Length: 236
Image: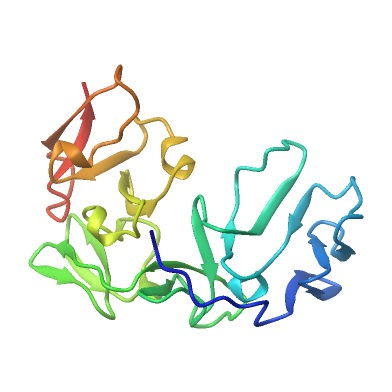
């Protein structure tokens, strides 16, 4: 289990809504994204079907994190960001708001309104002749030029490898592959995708998904993967 910071009660009390209403009071209000207004908690209009409860974990209570959220139990209501004891997908952040041992990745060097996500602060990703770590944690790969380690803000979506095994991810996350790179994800954010469209990177079969006794995997090399990813899980 990832350690949480010491108990706090809202180290920042206002968070950005959108448009005409720039901020909401985190203790008492939620943001209606499409109406661009803050509304009192507990008396929100039913017509507002997309909400924000926080912007970073500074706006959450003791033992809670501000989570990107895609699994609202009510299909008629989207809660874009909300405070939870543990994020089912990932924690949104600005620099300095992640728990100890984590760092905020994916921030924009030019747009301070772009939020990042909390990731393991120390990673090691194979990238051809290089190994990406420290200030250049991600591997950019092309068949023509091979691999190059880049800073998080330099990477583009295509052929960007954030991990080559689960050790590069937070506890409870897995290193998943698709046609354009690799990234760490958790829970339904991974397994909600068909296993035929996203794949798990592996060193051994123990790294493969546990999807029940009727679905089994083998950990084998794949000639279409770059050298930074040696094997992936194949469903048997």
